[in-house]
Image (tube, rainbow, N blue to C red; front, side, top):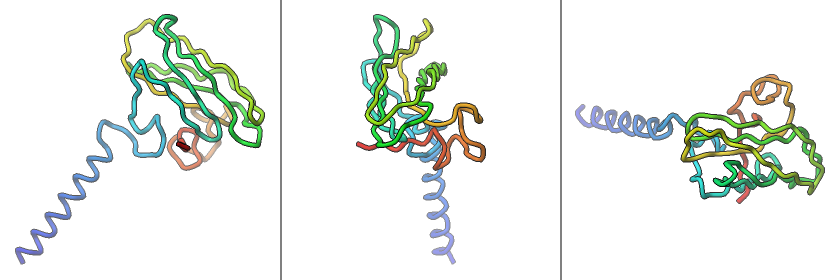
Length: 156
């Protein structure tokens, strides 16, 4: 009888640790950069592909802006590509103006940061409708679903 309780307690303890690890610092567990809680330092560069859009972005302290480019890495046109930056102080910058990108086409991105203090940031490109729900999700999608725009597919 003691062995059963000990085993049950061990299982409950492991599940509790697993659940708390997945939910630490309030991050939603997905494959997405934004949801993962990964934050870049001010001297780091974001370089990821998400939904076929490669975003390369860095912070420039002198101009107090995020600069780089977003390019289409697919063989199809990406519709309404836009970029968001999330600062460590909770401020969200963007999204930029939606732009259709033909295969292998790229555009420059420059987003000015506010004069408020921040010491980290994250970014991501979004692709698709901008007239839907929050951040242009199609009806029936949610921000953290497999099909949702905030789910990244890293290709490195």
